[in-house]
Image 1 (cartoon, rainbow, N blue to C red):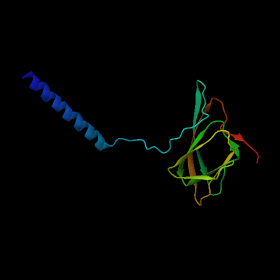
Image 2 (cartoon, rainbow, N blue to C red):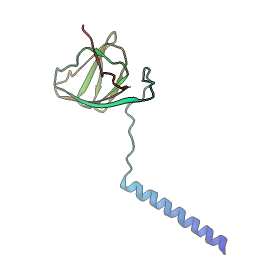
Image 3 (cartoon, rainbow, N blue to C red):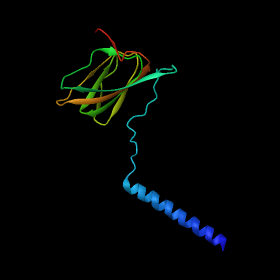
Image 4 (cartoon, rainbow, N blue to C red):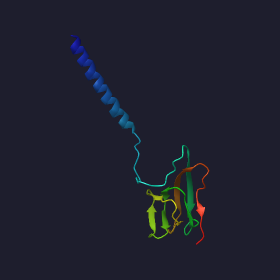
Amino acid sequence: MRPHLALSAAIALGWSSAAIAQDHGAHGIAKPNLVLQQVVEGLPKDDKQSVRVMTASFKPGDKTVYHTHRFPVTVYVLEGAFTLELKGQPPLTVKAGEALVEPPNVAMTGYNRTDGETKVVIFYVSTVDTPFLDLLSH
């Protein structure tokens, strides 16, 4: 009798777990959407790092200063399109929903070459007290 009771309990628990999982799925589980995966060099190796998340808005024709970064910078485009010109490379344009990694120690300028506003989110991991960028002259 007890083996049947144990089997019945296991089946009931199994059905309950499946029902809970299905019910939980019905309410929706947020899943991450991979936008960019890239192997990078030049990340800080100190015991502690500074993490910065910034936003920027570019009106049509706006551009960044000519600069470098000491560590890689990830840019995610929320709205519009962002064009990055890296020294010695052809321009790279990323659109809303896309991302790019700006390499460290490479001269660059970013642009909004669209007719509308461009909005980006910028992620920067650096050593503590490192400036976000280093200005360069052309």
